[in-house]
Image (cartoon, rainbow, N blue to C red; front, side, top):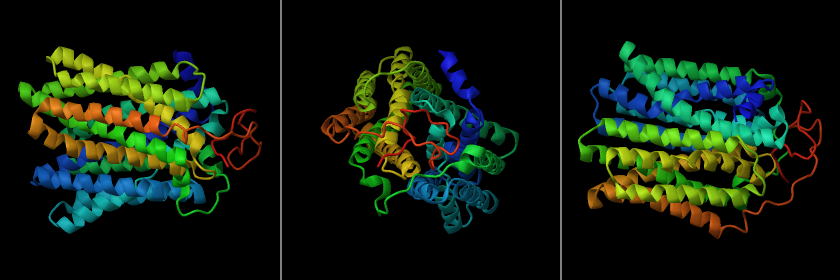
Length: 419
């Protein structure tokens, strides 16, 4: 199982690109907890902290596809690094100025979110030229999904460590400085400097003119909604028991399940159309969420949380393949960025819906929101089956093309774009 992942990491530039991207995304992955801890240390309320975090999240959702389109038009170094620097400066303004001026604080987090570099989409656009073979690229997508789980687990721990050693303001500054270094490592690499998007048709909708991509985004909005609602539902469950530590166990179990599922999924080759496989995986994901409404004791609930997470990373990894197949020519970074945005917006909506659900019907109702989100995600994929049938792809990649400067793409594998 590990041999396939080691094969990818041994490929030239692969380990550097993966590590640089994960480090570069640390500010985004830790922003919510870092902002909350900083605002509380400044004497602000949870309402103010939540509002600032929400502004950051909304600005990120707006900025990702816009910056992704800019990457497709102008290349990675010209967009990724300047965006990372501006985003870090926004957070630095918040750390230095504090929350004494609400207008400045909101403007700072808005700038930080809006200019969050689309490193996630950029990495997935680079994999074909770095790895070549289709099976290796698909395994890299799975490894990418697993690595995200590690980052979203380790990142908050790093923030809390920096807060304990120094202060929340220092944590904000250090995390964002590290993020700039990660982005710098990526854009200075040969694949990032050489990568060029395929020629694109001028169209104001960009990647969104693909019906297949729209169908996928509609589904993953509800996957994000399910995951966002679980974070609130798990907290409500822990409050019911009067044991805050249970919340940590539930979220850790969810992450562990995703890690296991992603590792197993990426360790084998899969036959058949990824669109069909995605419907099966999302169906299993929905089935995994439904038993959470039973809200049994802590041990059983932790086990259910782990099971519910098993198909999350495989669903995300498979969605990367589908995005790659359906993105209009010359829009691959933008298309991946739209997936990030849609998933994040769905998670925010899930968080907002789960709160009232707890108040109206108790903890079980908030977990029911997750189950409903999973079912809705499956329904969208089933209802849009016709548009999710990928059009024929070019059988042989053209060597020396804009997306294959190093001639790394093997015959029979397209470089990630379609006409």
